[in-house]
View 1 (cartoon, rainbow over the protein chains, first blue to last red):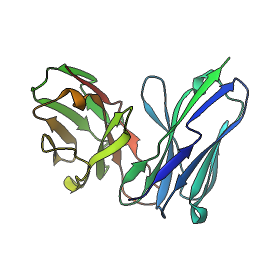
View 2: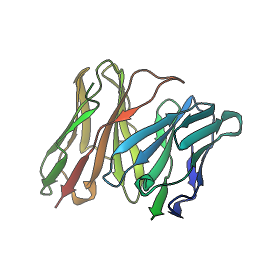
View 3: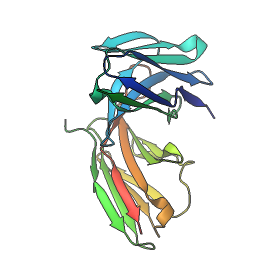
View 4: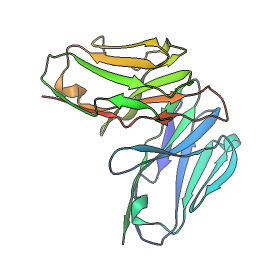
Amino acid sequence: GIQVEQSPPDLILQEGANSTLRCNFSDSVNNLQWFHQNPWGQLINLFYIPSGTKQNGRLSATTVATERYSLLYISSSQTTDSGVYFCAVHTDKLIFGTGTRLQVFP
Amino acid sequence: DAGVIQSPRHEVTEMGQEVTLRCKPISGHDYLFWYRQTMMRGLELLIYFNNNVPIDDSGMPEDRFSAKMPNASFSTLKIQPSEPRDSAVYFCASNPWWGENTEAFFGQGTRLTVV
């Protein structure tokens, strides 16, 4: 089956810093989503982005489907950005990546 | 819409007991997914339904696990008998259709502890 790898596995930032999270997938996909799992365990939708670039406030995402990767950019990070970020690819089903755990300190 | 609703939010049960987890998808969504999240294995897809029909149950770990979707607004995941290694957070998600311009939405999960 398709493999979905995320990097880095862990990221520690000071408030105000910028970061880039990467999602690599091993086969073509119909769609891709980014989620934030907050410290209470809730999975929050960030983007669905089969290709191209989207922006929402301090967050933006880019998917290059032909090269099988997606990037999530977080600018001016805040402590509330802490949690785990997952990408998930749509093939005939929804498969999650391994996640990036982000900790933002004041 | 209230989103995907799961119940209970927390469940503690003794080994050997039957456990039933419940999910109400977003109205009008044709796809429903059940996931299990553990530290060791991350988010694993257990089973998914399209229009109430199970499409792929290859992720169901054992025969002790079963899932049903009797109608478009309700699904259950049952574990019988439960074991301590079943302890995990179980998520339900729904998706309106399958394609590029669509996204899955998740419930708040059920934290299951089997002692």
